[in-house]
Image (cartoon, rainbow over all chains, first blue to last red; front, side, top):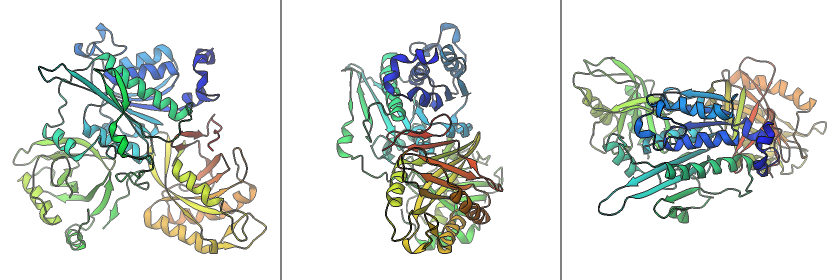
Length: 268
Length: 112
Length: 173
């Protein structure tokens, strides 16, 4: 029965369902993007989750929070995610934390892949640093809607894979001192960012596809840099132009290979 | 970033248990039980000095927890994760190109 | 539960190193150095670096695949002391499929690992054996005289490959 459920995705490989079942997936942020990811992973058959989100559902989340119902207002977002998973996988192992991941970081270390669905550059930097330390592939997604009247609003987004040993978010130019400084000057307040369900769904779907490929290797695509740029006005996703200036063989200058595990402080 | 050895020696002279670490291109100096200015609660605390430009500051001093002090600094970094530990910092600009000991003293003046 | 994570670059480098012929030894040996991480269910070992054993630190002993001398072992012990890292003895069996430790391997490790435990008291040490397309590892937790199987080994890269548990490893070459 269980295998029959996944028969339409058997092209992923002979052992793919076994691999999927054995993996633990971390998702930080269960709002617009993270809720799509949770839903898709549960359909695919991922059984082990580490989830973090400190927020509760607000009425303004209902335009995009997958799985949320009108009566869920004020319920923790982790509860919505758990319900979505359990509705498909009653025996799934779910570690769900209604807090910032930094307040209980140890469970994150057990993850085989981490999805970052966070709002700020500094959060991304911290998540990537943790992922690199514990050799965990990190997939970052985000959507931005800019409104500069009289021009029509512009929807853009990104999906970036930060694979340990390969160029990081700073190497590909997504994180920079200027962006982090600018954000800090606003005290990291992302504000009430405009968000729409379909844009979140696009980047989340790409991110899930990348994750499945990393572990099943169904595309046999080999090593590659993944920095996808979403243009929501034209409805297209393209490799980001910065990749033209980078090579898969470029060494990451930010995270050396031996800067892993719990930090060892060197006595001066 | 290369820090002159004489500046490191100066820090070692002041802080017996000082150690260093790096993460994501940033260098940090860890000082356990750093003595804080008079009137601060707690009086001593683990601290992390980042002598490099970070988040729009030329250097930054992080504390293991928020400190109660005579003034009320603007704690704008709360529970941020560096070298697998959570840290707090207040918004305080100090001049660039200071020696490490001067840099540390300038940051601590933000609590006076 | 013991989990080992190692970057694919490092595994490729190790395989290349261990397949180099030696003038008299049948196999080659190296040491993998690891950092630790606290883990909800046990121990997380993260591979940080690999060092080959230089040619002149092998003993000419044709009763075994490879025997290394005390200089090689002392050098590994020194690094454990200096860095606080764990060390793993690494060698390779030239076949396809999941490798296993031979009785000779086990006997040699019984003598080697206590030396590592003496200098790296609070960290796990172990051994890794590779085949052409697979790998298996064991670890001695601090104060234990017997090894534990490493439950899950993840080779991180494109693709990321898992060994252990109910996954028997997949061809990675």
